[in-house]
Image (cartoon, rainbow over the protein chains, first blue to last red):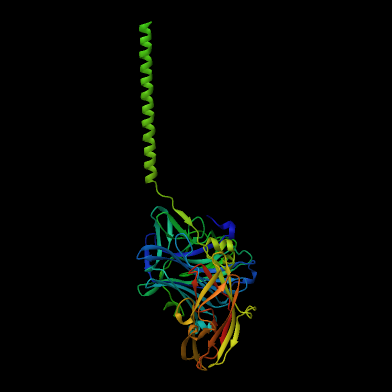
Length: 279
Length: 218
């Protein structure tokens, strides 16, 4: 059932990191930092919101668990930012008792959304840096929530669906999602330091564009007969303002960046001025 | 005549035999085709279906049609009377004293069978939401002379504890009390949220919308 007629498009566009399909990495932690500093939310259409959304697949070793973890900072037209965690399995939304707290304003410096797995539990955190002094002194507000998932680890990289080799599953991806396309203003969403913990460091791989929606460019996990992708539509009209290693600034321009276009080619270790989100 | 009849009958028999043979051939061919087709079906690559994953916002959760689609049976919305301005309310507090915030918890049910929600209230349980605030104290030159973390859950209590019920369509008034430690650092904004509130019944399917926009500051 496609529910677009019922409640809007849920457009999404993301950055995914990989080397080549089949190169899947096991990790315990992933994160991305976001801000909306160059966005005027009051120009959003009524009821519309813009989300900085991190998505990652759960696993048991290299095998997918068929769970998806989503951790997001959501900017409303009011200028308020709310924290949102979700867990999905292959066919449904399995949470439903998540707190959805107010965590800040559109002009806050940074929201780090992080997911990690330990002892069969999946932990969600949101590190909120309200001011430049918070960044300077590394003094965030930290919001935490956990879910007993049974998963052993998270997955990064990509692979081909065993029943349809043209379908690339992208296990770690992040980017903007809305309930309805925001076309009223040239909004920007900065995603920085998208990374995963690997061999003792926070690493990133080359980044590429993936489209939400029925073309399945944003497929993130799978089973023998199905795949689960992020969003319901691709975010038409969104391009990049710029991108460098581990960073992309998304901007609504009216023209859409190409699917699978490379955002950055480098791979390496993240270098950030704060340390608490990486602990 | 007899011979002709016999010839005719023989020809007819031959014709019938040939027709029967043809029918048999067609039947065999048909069965063989069906068998091949069924074999093909068995070995055909299964179709991979695609399933979208929209992330739900408050508009989705407050829309019964959407919410039911995602097996959400209702929501509890937490509000204060004061948070009507864009910026968060800053509640001035005194170290060593208590600060109180009145909260209204309203339950909306989408399922006639779910006539009430039961919440477990225990901020120190470590379940559900936790909130911390990191801080530093600096000297006049900006050098850090002290750093620490305030855990909101350890400071918060409610006027009710354990399991509380909210009937569908009704609002529960709660008082959230924060015991401000004597060494609470000056100038630090500690965000307040509905910490330590978890679902007891139903076990899942109820969202907790926390609209508390308050920070305490000494």
